[in-house]
Image (cartoon, rainbow, N blue to C red; front, side, top):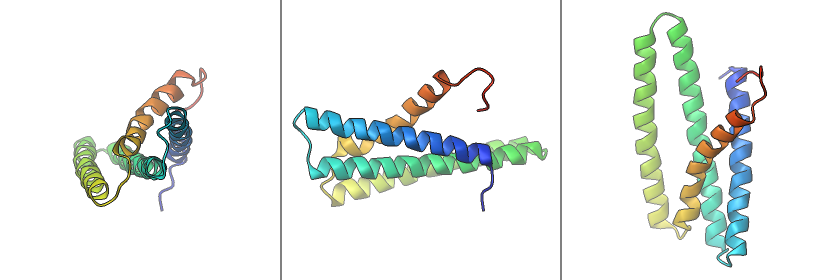
Length: 133
């Protein structure tokens, strides 16, 4: 079981931010008169996949940091780099498969991947002085 409290707190913050931005995405679609079930399902799919991707990243980096503290930084770096390639290939395969076989809105499904980065930037921007990362 994964037991890094700081990493879990970070994942929860990012997941909440992605959920809020996904809800705003749906509202924008509705305001533009483009809302449909396909948009809703695409946005939810994208939110789940982007949060799962961030969780995989969080676990990998946390374990790599532990490995680097143990005195093996090269192995830790290789693990993070390998994980990023594997996660990218898996993301690409999942998106291609799902978007080819279903009628989800592609834009609504892809936007939550960007929401992770936006949430990270906003979290860091509004982080109070002295607050732990």
